Image 1 (tube, rainbow, N blue to C red):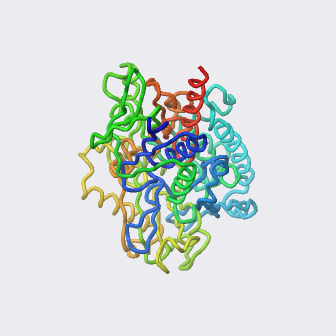
Image 2 (image 1 turned 135 degrees about the vertical axis):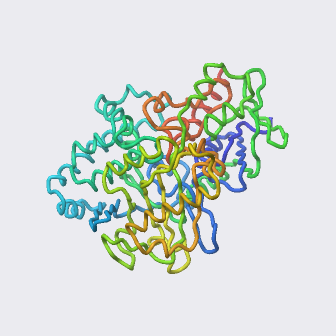
Image 3 (image 1 turned 135 degrees about the horizontal axis):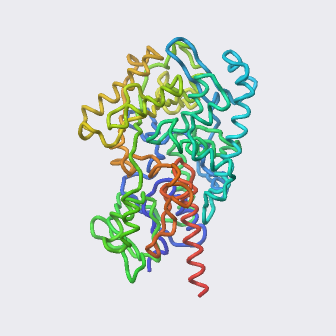
Length: 506
């Protein structure tokens, strides 16, 4: 048999799974449908002289053990902390910066409410404690929600807004934190379950700091490139432009794959980095799985609400609330357009019936002030993550005209806070939920391969071991879910290796 393992998909999780398998001595083949590796963790060049993190844009949850085990830094991975952490602005001239330096943050918050200084410190201590429980479960073979503390379970079932409003009263501060409770999620911050999404975004420990977020030198594709380099260094083979059409099943076992062109490639077992819907309803032959399991897959919640807009700017955004024509601290932070929690909730409620938010939630990043290699001299890349823009529209499918209209609405919204931006736009890359599905294989454009809400987290996510023996999942449809963590890849690889060892011992 030519290969021990075939890994379907060269996204970051598939590449990390391949690296761990190859490091353990397995003969591994990675098959990628696209002409380049990385999946949603990709750096590309849509315009001459520009390097764009097309989909994912910052890193936090990439597990330090993976960085160490695969020596990713030797393969070009270099993260650096984002500081300040966030910048929130209003249209009436107010703004709030949250710094990595606690004293600077205290000064900022004191301008609004002195009691919120202690409130934020208590919030972060509590939230990071709950987030550590998620972090500690990343590699669990059998993750269990009921193993968490009772307090964490209650917080995860509740809403992000409810949690935040217990501690702080300043509207901008509330929104800056609650924002992380809805990223990638088709719920509002006042909806149950968004407490978990908030904690999930604090679960990372990049550079050893709980809850911190960082930029990656050279863009997010540097993570995938490093993982690929590690996998190849251990002997794995990676083939692009090799779309897998079906899993080969022989005697109730996954024994390889069939490419779209009909080529059959045999292996001892298969790992899929694709989402559960694509894996079980498209790649696994019909009739292989039990009807009850198929129904579970069909009922999986994965309606994508997120849109990505990458904008080439001729100059830095100049925010009315904190004017500066030169690079300033606010340009290095996560920039929020959401002045209060009610703004976020309205954005969700606008979209519940299938139309884009009238006033969208925007989360924006400017890496170019700290990494000059990403854009031509004097120009800047504004990375915009926007909600809510439903995959399934009530007025029909996404068309080119609707894509452009959505992008126009986002740019106009930015212009209310940074008036120079609309006239500074030189080019833009538009990725609606439909585009995210088509380009990166994200089901219905859902960036997490399915909602990260109670009922779809921990043991209620799909197991890395599937009902088809010899077929494993190693993508974000498994625990711990979405974001660039690599943990699903590690868990899938470890399960396969454990089963291989057990079979050899029999």
